[in-house]
Amino acid sequence: MKSIMSKNFLAAGLLTTVVNLLLNAAAYFLLLKDFYHAHPAVSEEFMRQLHRPPDQLVGWAMVVTALTMGFLITTAMRWSGATTFATGLKNGLILGMLFWGSVNFGLYASSNFFSYATVFVDYACSATAMTLSGAVAAWMLGRGGLHTAGSAARNLA
Image 1 (cartoon, rainbow, N blue to C red):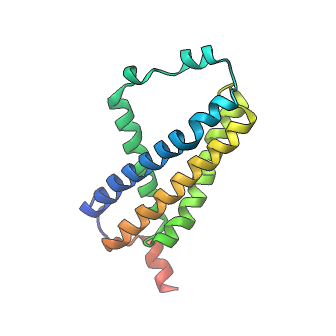
Image 2: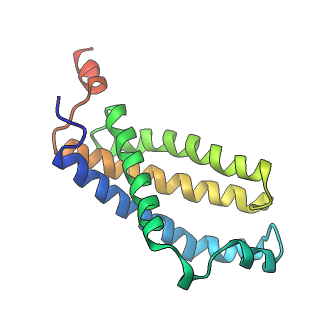
């Protein structure tokens, strides 16, 4: 069994990071930004206080966030044994629905960050981005011939 930190795993994690980041950015700029404004949970003044303006974003922290999410998705695909785009879609959908369901509905239950409408739209966009990113991760892992104990066990059955 190859090390989890093989060149292929690193390449898959980096590509997954970029894909996930681009999908989430596209969802925000094409859909969510206007949707959040049309369905506010709190006042516009409070939202300005809550979020940093673009010129005050903390770049290194954004890089860490993007990388950790990309490698979380890639690790989950590796552990699941997914090595094709199709198996990555299936496993990515499960991961995305569970992960973002926990995050979004937890925030909705405990804070005023989301309105009723935005929690569902954000959930759908975030889970979709993770699903597609999982498919890319699995495809990349499969290209490098990485096989986990889970996929080896399925091959024996």
